[in-house]
Length: 249
Image (cartoon, rainbow, N blue to C red):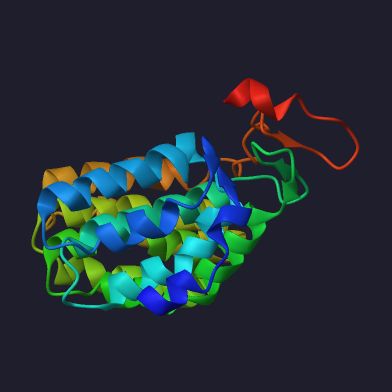
């Protein structure tokens, strides 16, 4: 990973607080054997390269390296890396695809569009993580099954299979919630997902927590599809000027 990191001109990109030259340092330190170093690097990345959920060009450029760390069983605390990947993907897909991003240095980009596309292309990785032997890794990945798989039938099938495979209540509740999220995102999967939730809510062999969660998720699955979130001050549409990027510093 080291040589590939060095091949990117990080200083030509910006994050919330200036040039992104420190991003490769954080990426390397996220794989450190020292928990304190890892935590500090992850916090720094969230605070600058994923500041308040924003997605910068340097955030998009980091994704292949984050996936490399998530794929490596030897990476310490893989679940935190996967949580970061899912967060970047969630925020990217929640943005208006027609918005133009204005970075702190005043340049325009479509980093959120690029990030969403890359993560959706690698959605099969999230499928593997959701079946990982380590519960923290599975917990971090389950939400991604509802966010990044474009084949609704396949996503429903995978989530249906995950519920009996999970013994922990946290993971099982995540599966139920993710099924509702999938139904909202992919209308083609809504009927199948809602029928599964309805059946689960009526299943007297399931725990009360799961049945209640399924009933609530069934109601959620029939809500109107969510609209893109309001534009962030650092974004503007194609036809109107945005505020001075310096105001967001």
